[in-house]
Length: 117
Image 1 (cartoon, rainbow, N blue to C red):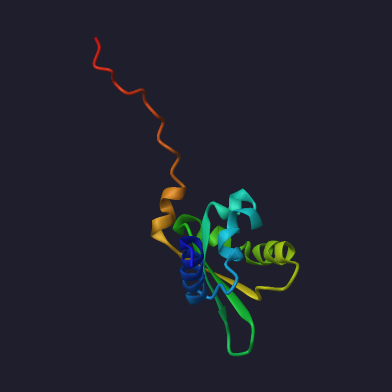
Image 2 (cartoon, helix red, strand yellow):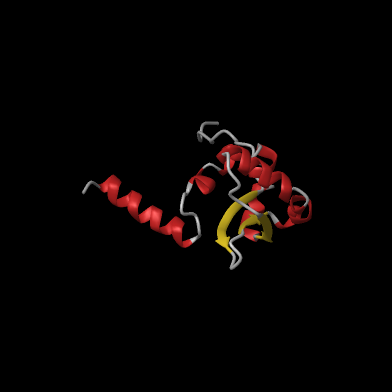
């Protein structure tokens, strides 16, 4: 067994624990959604309810959770269009403070000091 095969199996197991039997939804998030939506969110879990419906839980930058909650149906449409099937019945959002750094603009790079005067 090659290292790549072993890693692939272990990663598949991790995605399955989060409900992603096919990890493409998580791996292709930035491709599935437009940049203005994907940069503020991360898919956390895809769960199947007792009635057979599926719910996608999405972590969102706390300052944008109200705004993102209005895009639930649009996100479903993007996912359905990408996979050409009805993969998600409902999208729910949770605030995640660790994503707040996504809103901060990158620090301007300053030239390194050479020590020469």
